[in-house]
Amino acid sequence: MKYRKDFVTNSSSSCFIVVSKIDLNDELREYMKEEYGKYGLRLLEENLTKWNAEEALSRSGYYLEGEYIPDEVAAMLDPESDYLVSRHYTWTTEGDENGDDAWLEDHIPDKFKERLYESDSD
Image (tube, rainbow, N blue to C red):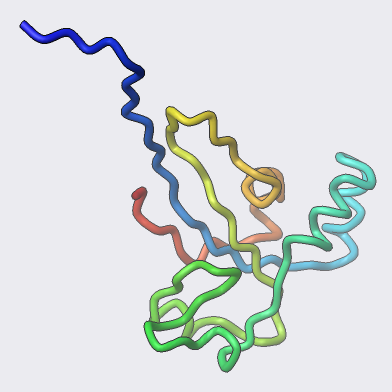
C-alpha cells in the first residue's frame, strides 16, 4: 500500500453569472440610502453598467463586464438601460466569497430588477 506524505489538494469552486436589468430611479436610490447608507449608493455607482453592443462584441461573441452573454440575451439589451452583471459562488473549497456585485443583486428589491440571464453553474 502507498501512503502519500506531502500536501494533497482537490480545490475547486463553482459559480454562475446573472445579468439583471436595473430600474435605476430616485426610489431605488432612496431605498439603498435608507437601508445601506453610503455603501449601498456606492455599490450602485460602481457596479451598474450600460450596454454598448459595439464595445461588447469580440470574435467569440458578446461580453458584458468581462462575462460572455449569449446572442439572444444581447439582442434584448438596450443602450439606455442600466445592467448589473453579478458572479455568485454556489460552493468553493478555496475560500472564494461572493463580491459586491452578487451582494448588490441579492439586495436590490425585485420591483427594481429584472433577471434577463442566469448561466449554468460551472
